Length: 176
Length: 431
Image 1 (cartoon, chains in turn red, purple):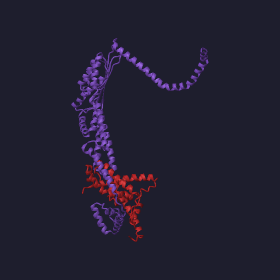
Image 2 (cartoon, rainbow over the protein chains, first blue to last red):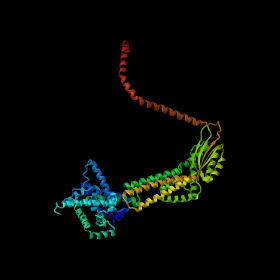
Image 3 (cartoon, rainbow over the protein chains, first blue to last red):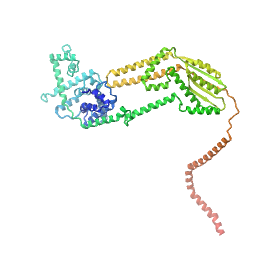
Image 4 (cartoon, rainbow over the protein chains, first blue to last red):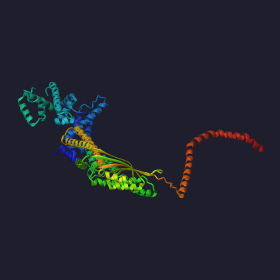
């Protein structure tokens, strides 16, 4: 199986199938990325689409200096920041669009979502990138433009905070 | 956790679970976890948290997104294909942009060509007018163009023959055309500069008075051509009531300046002469060193860009820095070329004035010309009068109409009253 970077180079040479393959590898993950960070499914769809269109437009300039995954999520994070700024401006600073989705149904799911929502913004971002996007510490550091050590320490803090919430919740649910 | 009892920090335990430790360190961490209950508990807590995470699921991405994105991909491919593969212009934005850049580049090349070989297109016509002018005994400024263009040609021959760097304007074009070529040429120039001795910019100015203006001018042109020089500038003035004069900036190879000056002095009586020489060796060396440094910086930046896979913002910053450095290199390079050109070609400001002979032969126009002129003037006066009348009517007409309309009724009344008062009784009396 070709690596993401090889596929991207093939697409540069004109192979549309290579792009289709990349889309299939990342579309759902990228949609999840936006969906867990925004409350409107339609916006998540549009932004997913926008990220791929940005990749299309920038394909000619793409150089495999960094992993394709890092490149893709860097674009996604940038678009998300723009979206958050825009929606907070539109909502006069109260901004509900920046909050995670209400898509989940089960109780555990709701618990995870609420617990994640309580985290400090950067810690939440690092945790989400690690747990759902499965990026390495190094990749997270690149995508968020922060040092690797910061990623590690803040990820640890985020997980410890989640553990506290988990412990506090367990007696209620009978230790599930 | 205490580092004396725990060789691993808590964050390191987490990094181990995330597979972020180096293999040896990971093996040591695994061994430590076997023994340390506290660390095992921490690992269990961390695993419990991670186990909970997948509970937060997200619905599947709608198929419409895939359709739209893949459609955009195939459209982009269709739009780009002719441009990239066949080099044919396509109606895409990218294609248009390429076309525009191409057109702008060609325009710049044509412009530079026009500067370096001025009035090439006009030269044939000016040769004709030169001929006609000579026959009539007048000297328009057009010949300046012809002579300078022919001399530019000779200068080009010189520059290739002596393998000196060509003039700045042509250089810029070649810089834009090929960076690699430029680098090669610059390297050659650098070794040349190293070999040569002090760099001296020589200038001279000379004012001459001559009785034979035409002969002096022809001799000047031959002289410049013979010494492989060229005219930087040439002006000829032919005032009606004074002698003709010629002002020129002549560029000749520095080595031949003395010989050229000796021959120039023969063209007439020397009224004024000045010579100067500026030593620019240090400036040149300074510039060369700065240029070398800038090139080195550029090389290092390119290496950084090639080897480091940093953040996108860092990459962009490095690229911007490269662009800035390249701009500086180009400026310094142009400055260097100008300096080299000044050193290799000495410049002579020349002024040749004709001794004025008062003449009575003011040109009297022929009878035919006078009749023709009179007819033309008469016709023009008549046409202008007519035009003036029409214009006056157009501008004053509306006002006159309004005034006329206002006055018409009272006037009519007065006329009627006058008629009735003075003429009607008379008419009645005659009846």
